[in-house]
Image 1 (spheres, rainbow, N blue to C red):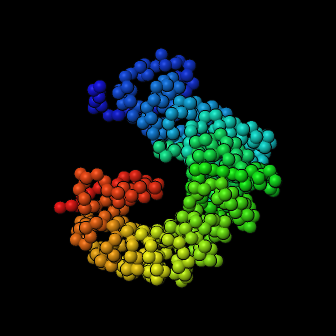
Image 2: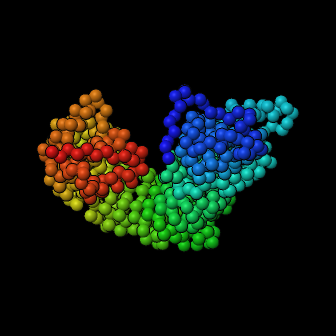
Image 3: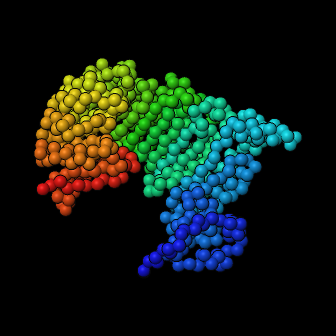
Length: 543
């Protein structure tokens, strides 16, 4: 079919008028809306002029013209503002239901504005001036009698219309301010829905762990990734049999559903028998700002969770302990764990690490001032360590510790530093890594001369070198010189320049099928989930 050419007239912004409101279109129907009868090409051309802020207009049209839902590109980035005031809550929920029914085939963004403290005080003043009862200071600007009704309406709206999602993020609203948290007692948790196949997400508010348990039960069949800093009843995870990654704040782990404060035999047995057959990654941290348990009780609950997961989930191969406070949980990890992320320093960490016989991938988040004992920590890795990533303050002493640790099986080294050392220290470290294949230098200042020194110091097995785009004016010239260095010194070395995308310089012809090494790096980059890693440009430098 021949595509229609756009008109030369300047684009006109399309908005919903009083005649094209949601209610109006719903009453008149599609047969009285000539716009809905247009062929696909002019139909798309007209609605492509809608701004992202005109999501309400698009939803209004969708009520009369269901075919709008068949064009996902029209919905991309559109926003709908749903008021949170209790006076307009019923109308907002009705609009939400209509919007989601119209766009149920795609993901989109729903923004809800938060009230400031001044808004809340104004609401209370307005209520007093009308002679009504003053609003409770422990509620979200309306009497307690209406709280349950509002919570039930929001939960019902979500459970009825939320599209299938694979990622759920639960977090505290306004968690940076305890005063705001007290004001927002009944709306201190929100759920954020994302889909890896779309740039949009749906955000709705939740109240307490009982609501969260119901939510997980509802969307469990499609849920693959769960991240939460708020209380999640562990037994509810049994509904998420396809879960692959679990990221929790141990201070908010709850064995029993709210409001039960203590464990019961039933709840303990439910968690002890928890089996998630596809779970492969567990991340645990401790955030005192969102803590509902003290540290000792939090660690006890987290240990119970880990023991249950490792007992019934044989495929768990990666654990990330994201705070020094949770390092004791390393004792609950099996000795044959393959991937581990830890924080340094932490008391007794070297001894705990010494029993990890199967460790192949280790990430260490370094404190600003502590690397004196890093060598002993690395020597404690008795397993065949293949990949090491150091994040934080990588100084000269840090990279020297890497060399002194005798990591002869290491094939990948990633250095990401806020204040990187001279690369000549890195060159010295490379001489002690005879099997190194990949070197990733993030935030390092580079020049062709320095790279030449690094490559010369490295052994012949180095195959991948990843550097940053420094965004200097002479970048193009510098990259060309770096490519020359790569060509001269290593026939098999690939150079990756990290900027908005990854640019790959390689020796084999671009016409050839991608080699296993290139494919391996592409998979590694893609697994980081970084927007810049979505595109890998290739530049053939073979003569």
